[in-house]
Length: 239
Image (cartoon, helix red, strand yellow):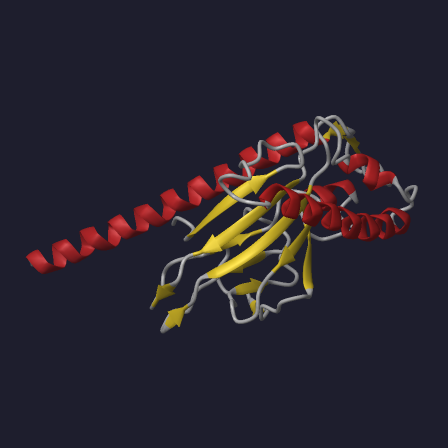
């Protein structure tokens, strides 16, 4: 099932649209990224100390100004829909990176969280998702899979999704997500050394393969079920 959205991904060292094409875009967005970096640093510094690391431990690990930085900003647009039962704006998942800052706008709801659900690769039925109304101003902060692994599972990744209304109209939804992710060359190992050291780059690649492999498998399972229903309906009609 394809997510009903489109997004524009940027990193601090991205190639930027020219001012002729999008006036002031680079200047405005760069300032916003810097503010996100400052907010993220405050949160990550608290988490560093809480886990027993030096205060600047995660700041060095993210290294947004380094050539191997994986931290990125995404501008996301979820298209308007009507009677959208059976579709996703963004299917249930956890973020792969460390820490996400999510910015939303009043009236553009759809985000739902599932407390207690940790795995991004399990799609069990019957989980309780709680709507989180969108507000202009407050920032939603999500812990991701990388930070969960880096903390020896002491910090839990947040399982969430974005839905449109099953019945009725859902307006366009615009959001901005700032994904703090460890730089490729940074070594990640939890305070208790639960797992052997690994570079963030290697961990990120392996996690991406696992997540998208699980998604592909799930899509195949759904397709097989739908094919089975179609075949059963055809046989019944023929009878």
